Length: 454
Image (tube, rainbow, N blue to C red; front, side):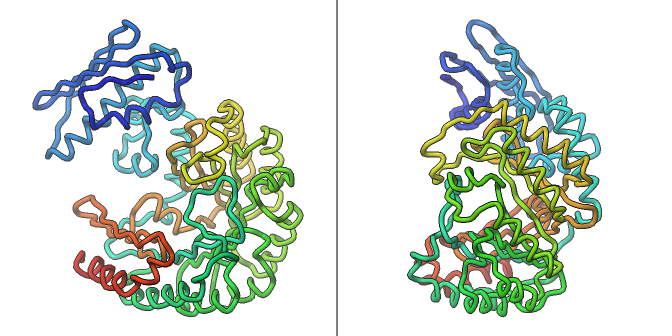
C-alpha cells in the first residue's frame, strides 16, 4: 500500500496503523490534514472514494495538540480503510503498547471513549475492565514509589523467537567482570531508593549464571521487605541448589517459562530440554513455596491451535500462581523474523480467544496487558493471576506508575513526575564490554539523574 500525506512525520504511524488490514497491496491512500484553532480536519481518498472527518479539540499547548493530531489522523485512516475494505480489527485504531494505561488516562468514561474514538472491540474492553478491577489492591500512584530491576542478559542458548539483549553464557568472556560491575552498580543504587515496591531480576536467564556469581548478585541486593522475583526461566538452568540459593536470599517469586509443552516445538525454537523437564522442575520448585509464573507463546512456528490448547491446558493443570500468554512478536533481531514474515492470523486469534475463555473459567484473572509492534494478528500479551497473587512489578511497569531503578547492561531507568504527567529515562549501554568499561560513569550519571530529578 502506498500512503501519500501532507503530514510527513506521520508516515511511519500510518504504516503501523494500516499493516494488519488485508488485501492492501495495490491501494493508494491520499491523506490531507487541515486544522483551525479548535478543530482538526482529516480528508482521505482511497480508490476514488472520499472520506472526511472533523474533531473539535481543546489543547493546552503545542505538544498536546500534536498528540491529538496524531491520534485522530490515525483514527481517520483506520475508519476509512475499515469502510473501504469492509474489515474490522479488534484493537481498532489503537496502536499504543499499554491499553490499560491509556484507559486510566481517559478517566471514568474510558470504555465509551475507547469504543467510539478508537473503535476497540467490546471483547477487548471487557478484558481491560477485568484488569482494572484486579489491579485495585495494587495500583498506587504515589511520589517516590520505586521498583528495582536487575539485568542479567545471559542464556544457555538463544531461542528462535528471541530479540532481547541476551548473550550465550558459554561464549561470554567477560562474565566475572560483568557481575563485579553489576554488584558495584547495585550497591551505589540502593541509597537512591525511598519506597521499594518490588525487586525483579530478569534477563536473559539469570539462573544461568554459575552459582557463585549468582550469589554475588543476590548478596548485593540483600534482604528486602517486598515482592522479590527472579526469572528462573528455562528448566535446563534450574537445579535444587539454585532454588535453595534463591530461598536463602529471600526470593518470593520465580518464573518458569515453558513457552510450549510440545517437544517438537521446543526443538524447533532451540530449547535443549523436553516438556517432561518442565514438569519435573516445576514440581521441584513447588517444594520451596515460591509463587510461580509460567509463560506461553501463541503462534510459535509450526504450532496449530490444538498444539497451543494442549500447552495451555497443561499449564492450567499445574495450577501456577500466574500464567502469561504472549502473542508471538516477529521483531528485528530474532532468527524467527528472518524466516517468517506473517503467520495465520485467524489461527492465532483463535488461540488468544481460547486462552481468555479457558483461563477466566479456571479461576485465573487478567491483571496486566501490553502490546508490541510486529505482533502476529495485531493482538496482545496478557498476564493472568490467581486471586491475591498478582505480580506488583508487572503492574507498576506496565502502567508506568512508579520510578524504575534499573541496574545492568541495557537497563532503562525511569523517573516519574506525577504532577507533570511525564517520565524521564536513562538507558545504560547494551554492549557488555562497554557497560563494564563505563560503569563508574554510569553510576555517576544515574546518581545525578535520580537526585537532581527530585
